[in-house]
Length: 142
Image 1: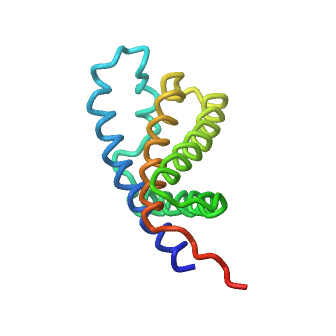
Image 2: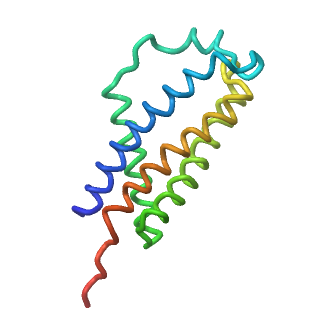
């Protein structure tokens, strides 16, 4: 249980901080992308001026719990296994969420359908690699 908590806290922290880093880099280069790739007119009308930080951190922790569970179920816990598992889980979660958003809302563009899962899978991969540092669960004693 202690290892699960350590993985979750470490993974959630890495997920939150890598998200800040990756999205900041994306928004820095976004202005140089062609207009058909970036459609922020409607998206800027629905986004907040300032994010609610506690909710952002709590969301990273909830996603880290999910990733910790998947890594625990796989019974493999190296940095490379965590990285691969994190990337796979991240692309599956955000690919599904983004397809649903694209299907139901006009503010979600085709470009976002591609870039968001890729950037989010990088966050999950970093968190999974950090979780792999914590190590493998001990074998149960008979």
